[in-house]
Amino acid sequence: MQLRRAFALGLAGTATAQNGTPDLATALSSQNSSLSLLNGLIANTTGLADTLRGLTNVTILAPNNDAIQKILSSSMAAGLAMPGAIQNILSYHVLNGTYYASNFTSSNMSMFIPTHLTNSMYSLVSGGQRVEVMYNGTNVTAYSGLKQPSRFVTTNVNFTGGTIHIIDSVLTVPMNVTSTLPSANLTAAAGAIRFAGLNQTIDTTQNLTIFAPSNDAFNAVGSVFSNFSMQQVAQGLQYHVVQGLGYSSTLMNMTMRTLAGQNLNITVINGTVYVNSAKVTIPNILVRNGVVHVIDQVLNANQTGASPQPGATTTTAAFSGASTGTAGIPFTSGVTAATSNVPAASTTAATSSRSNPAMPIKTGAVGAAALFGGAAVMMNL
Image 1 (cartoon, rainbow, N blue to C red):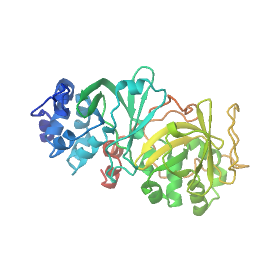
Image 2 (image 1 turned 180 degrees about the horizontal axis):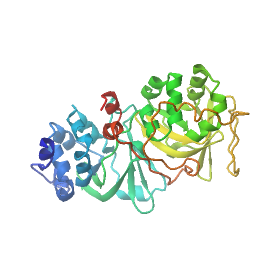
Image 3 (image 1 turned 180 degrees about the vertical axis):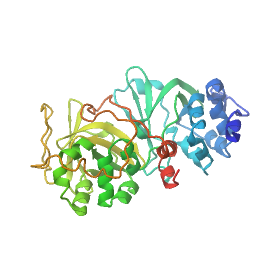
Image 4 (image 1 turned 90 degrees about the vertical axis):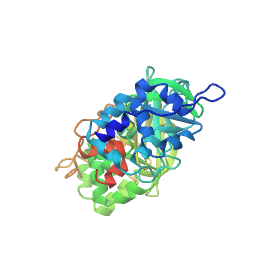
């Protein structure tokens, strides 16, 4: 309650530059009917107003009152008292560069924009954690961790250091890979990483691109994986991981070197992205140290020449003779799935332009992680 009362306070003191463009405090105060809680948050967080005052060439995604009230009314509110939590969360709402609404509406592809969130507790992405912004022909929307959407409701509130867009929900700080996968119903991939002893590597290596097979993909080759050793699973998983950031906007006909030391062949056919013969079905799940793309097949490092079959009604598994296992989906024992379903990977194809199925957040412990990302996991929020 004390924190909520503090949020009700507004910014004190405003100014306008000589050229008529307001400074940040004035610009935010001009939208006080929508941003009074954000203004109070800034005013009552030591040093935050001074930090924001010095910003130049930035775009601020400002959560409106409804967005912040939703956080204050949830179990996540207590976490705001963590040292540095507010500063780091808000730094994820500051984009590097000035982007007006027209910069987004004139693009037919998602933009992955670096932010001021560089604290390694929250981000292991060089240049700052990314936010995906796209225009779907009607609305401009920012996508953050767990593909949570934040719609632009007011745009181009300009100030001397850049511009402000008001959004309808607080951005979700991306979580660790091993926390994100179960929340995306990729429980087999999460369990395989744990079985192979790769949690630390996958969660703490900077700038990763991970092609994560869906549960259906793992199930289709369950007979093979039931006989794999820990070392074989680890080697197979490393063939799905690239060190380097590969958001959908940068994927083209190319090769990518994996942690297994072998190449993946990336092919784009009519806007659909393929990895060897596997189709990317859900793209751009942002994580603390990079990005995850969901694919519809498990990749085989011994079948690097496998090619896409876009016209086929069924796909050929990369593992010859593989079949569904007899013990259910492999590696899922003990892995808790999300409480809601993501769009079916078998029916949703990723494209290089406008394709962004939403993804739910689990309740409970992952609810806190939805706001605080990897820091929440490390602090057991």
